[in-house]
Length: 88
Image 1: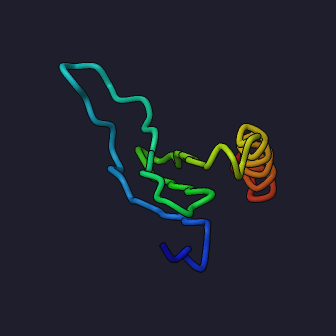
Image 2: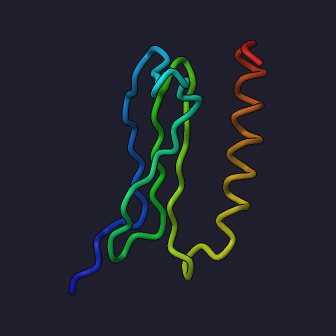
């Protein structure tokens, strides 16, 4: 098997701009998920929903044993970006 020339995939999937409901209950968020493929270390998928961005990270346990740290850094960086843009 030939290894791919990259080990990171980032995708963006636009979602609905308004709130969706199921039997009268509002959908409060989405959790994007992608299917890992052989040779990939990390997949980052972001999707929009009702004016928000939601991120999903799927990683190889051997390559990224501390994926939770990356989520922490992502949260911190997004907070800094929101503050710099004046939307925090």
